[in-house]
Length: 96
Image (cartoon, one colour):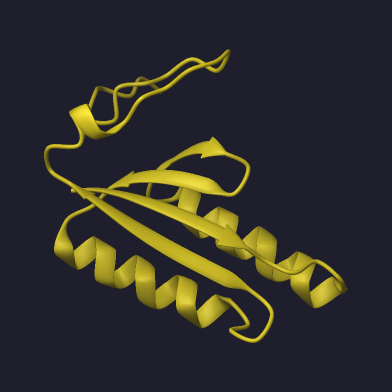
């Protein structure tokens, strides 16, 4: 399923900047960055639970915000893109 993950981490101090880097790094391991603090991730139920546990453990729930939007398996018609950034096929091949 496609899950959109957004976060807002307070960077008022060094600890916040560290949390921000850790959250972003963890999201990169599971999906594609589409905006500064927005990731599109194709996940199964197990991966989703694992990522959710990792991210909620990283944030400070009194200063930071974390959101998960569940777009499901038939997400192609639910996502529109306009503007200069090129899009990608979420379930396509990745060449390294």
